[in-house]
Every structure is written in C-alpha cells, then in structure tokens.
Length: 354
Image 1 (tube, rainbow, N blue to C red):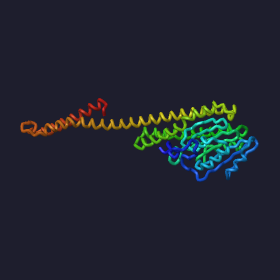
Image 2 (cartoon, one colour):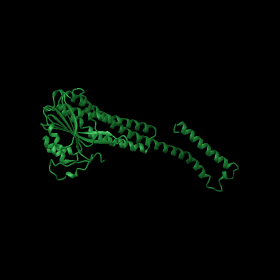
Image 3 (cartoon, rainbow, N blue to C red):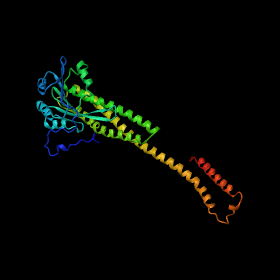
Image 4 (tube, rainbow, N blue to C red):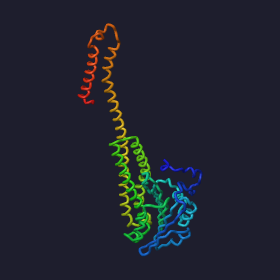
C-alpha cells in the first residue's frame, strides 16, 4: 500500500501554496539539465548553479530545463519565482501523490503525469511523478530520479530528426508526454506476459503461490488504473485547449496521442478482467479439487457402510444365531461382504461416479 498512498499529514494546518515536499528523497543532489535549440542551434549541458538559467530566457530559441530531484524546496521556489510560476503549481510539483492532471493558467500550462517502470529483478511496479510546465519559449520538467523514457526525444533533438527542432515548445511538451505514454505500452506488455505465465501456471499446477502472484498483479492493476485512467481526460483537455501556447499544427499529433491513451485504457481494462477471471478460475479449481476429494471419501464410506452393517450383525455373538455354529458361516459372511463391495463399485462405475 505504500506505493498507492503517501503520507500527507505534514501539510496539516498549512496555508494553501505552502511548499512542502511529499514523497521520498530519491537523489542526493538536485540537478538541472538544459537543452537549448532552434533549427540551426543546439546546446546541451548540465548547469552548475541556479543563476545559469537566466541566460536561457530567450525569445528566439526553445529551452528544455529538466530538474532531477524534488526534495530541495528552496531551489524549486527560486525556479518558480524566476519563471513566474504560481505557488499553487509549485505545491503540486512537490506533492508526488497527485493524480495525473492538466491546468491552464493562460501564461503557462501545468501537466502532471506518472512515469511507470517494471523492476526487472522483482517484477515490481515503480512509479515516478513527472511535472511539465509549458511556457511561451520554455518547457520545465521536474523528475524524482535520474533515468527516464525521454532519451529518444533527446536523440531527435541532437540529430535534428523530424520536425522537433523547427517547431515551438508545445511540440516538445507533446513529445515528452508521448514518450511517457509510449512507455505505458512497454509496461503493459510486460504485465501481459506475466498474466499469460500465470494463466499457464493456473491451468497446469495451481498452488497457494499462484494465488499470491495473482493478488500481486491485481494490486498492480489497481495502481495502474489510478495513474492511467485520468490520462484520457488529460490528453482530451490538451487537445481541446484554446491556449495560444499550443499551435494549431500540434493538435493533430495530440489527437493521435488521444488514440494511444484510449488504447492503453482499453488494454488495462482487459487485463483487469483477465485477473478477475483468473481469481474466479482459481476458486473454481480449488472447489473442484475439494469436491473430488469429498467424492472419493463419500464413495469409500458408501462401500464400507453395508460391510460395517454385516460385521456389526455378526459381531453380536448371540447364542441363537445359527450362522455362528455353521461350518461355512465365516467364509459365507466374508463372501457376502466381498460381493456387496464389488456390486457397489460396479454400480458407481455404471453411474460414472468413479
């Protein structure tokens, strides 16, 4: 549950806009990476100090400022004041427990998304909050950890591939959101492989460990739904936005992004249905196993009940029981019991109960 709910009690009693980091400290030092470009110019570097951001406020180039680490509240406050970002937006940037959302503040657009990863060693779902702020000539990106799904975007900028270097920051913001959404497909594909393996295990040799794995995947489905389901609304708001920050030429790409979002949510719902069906199947198989055991025990009891009756009759040892003094009394009783047992087994087989 720690991956689903974070402690927000630290903000109790504070005024709106109070800047408090909610989440784990995932890097030791905050780092700012900058990519500044246009059709002819490209510069990529890591900034040593905050003051270096001032020279990138330029009307002729597009700047991507990528900040890694959210625990340094003063640093983020200075950056927000530098670019004129409202404190309520900065408050959301610092709160890593937000659902995906998009807010239009006229001078800039705030976008909050979740970056999803599957840890290879454990298969555990990892979640990182990504905040994007689209300004007239700048895109601010806030990450919790180093390493992301943005490397293909960086390569396109370095190599001037496609139209990304010839258009404005709105297309850069679209490209970053698209990279996050494309990474969802990778995560869902890995989860789909896990579900297929669980299905094979369920049908071949289900055990308590199988049930534990099913519940683990089901818990991840809950987290995925929390972070992916609002994606459709977010992309639709971006597509329908009338903000001057989003050029008309970018709308067609955002429309394609909306199709991807629909595909992802449909896939997610399909996987959730499959997990629910697997739980039902496991319970049915367990019930069938129990029924088989009870069936065998019932048949064995049914066979031995008449044999016990015969043995009980001839175990009373009354003096006037003629069979007790007959020479062939004991073999006859045994023969009757064997015939009864064989007859009942034959009857059960004829009824296909065995």
